[in-house]
Image 1: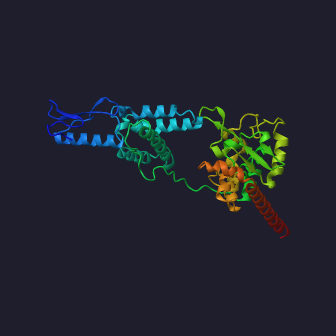
Image 2: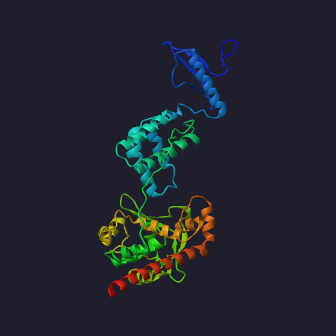
Image 3: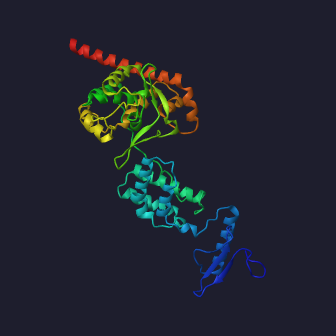
Length: 386
């Protein structure tokens, strides 16, 4: 705003040789800053200074010079400065950045990013055949990076990632096996060492990385429990790395249905060394069990084809177990504790209070298994008599 003598209280305006007007103003850092552009009239320049002054008063002003850092450089630094990220997460973020973000937006200054740019970038990904799920992952990464730029580094006044629904993966409903199908799949594994793997993964609701990281000491057949305390991660380069579970609530003890104890007893006796730290599930050559090796040695695809089941992923076994557990009548809190979900801090509290409820879940699952198996046996006997 100008004073009576024609001088402004905040900043100043000067006319350049080109005839356009340039603004300069003092920043909160004590330095003088020049406007990022020039203006055709003094009135436009005056409005720009008024807006900047208002942003400083409200705390929304950002240093235009700092915002000149390129998104690609800023995002790579953002990933490096998060030492708590798991190796697999770092690989995913780096891949998303290099494959889907940098090609279109990497050369844009962070301070120049707009919602329209983000919207166009996402639309181009979808048009080029990138799945909605992958586009959502890339969008969430970009939003997290720019949130840091807004809240911590003050490179932007607000996050331009404001597209409704862009963070939703909209994944299709995964297939769910019946109890009978779970046992049929286990029996169809080409290598019997994988029979217990199928049953335990399903009826204890375990993730792949959790089940292949189990040691002999993690399984207590008398108490009918399995303890989850770490996971094995296969990196893109082929290295296998032991890491904490996927979430804080991932460290948990899960009750095992009594119906699968005989299969576990047999497996431990036949395929697992006696040492407490011996891995429960290994490949034929006693190495870490890798996804590709498992599918090949177990002849996973062939088994599914024989059963007439299409597009079943190993992770769908956990989905099946979660569904069966939910059908037992367990509460949401009990289910979250059993599955190792960590939506909030309360997950760490209620998991310690759900041992009895968790045992009831396992008992209900066991009863369900026995009922289905008896029904199947009865059908076979009736068919034979006929």
